[in-house]
Length: 169
Image (cartoon, rainbow, N blue to C red; front, side):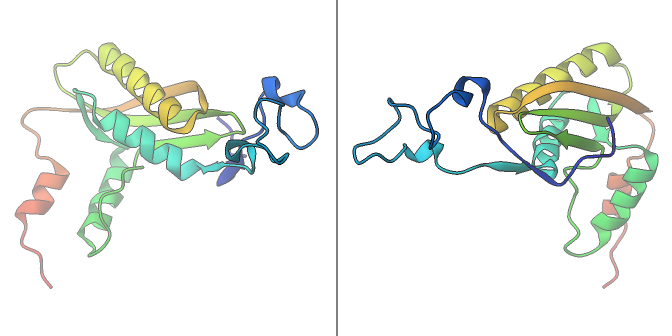
């Protein structure tokens, strides 16, 4: 994916609507009085961050995905989570490039030890594609997955470690 993405892009008419009469409405979609139906008046734009949130939630739902993001992103995220009002970032480890009718995603995940990486990656792809296409109507052209770490059973979790420490206020 290139770094030429913008924060929001427009949805344009599909090929099936490109040959419509002036005004953007077919005879079927015109209402009495000559106005097009409400669904064809105006544009819908979807920001990259919206697609990133949907993809992040869908990826986290897959069994075997321990966390999202690489080591540095998780470390910075743990610091941000400690700040009051910082909250957990659903988009950690997710980068989306949204076009007019298509989107491409890069995911960085941490896998639980003992699970099949290829099975988890396939499940993540299927879940992310399904969620993004269902919620946005954008075509997902690719979901690139980078496995940056494996969570071993005896390793302490950064998030669990943070919850055990008393917070000073």
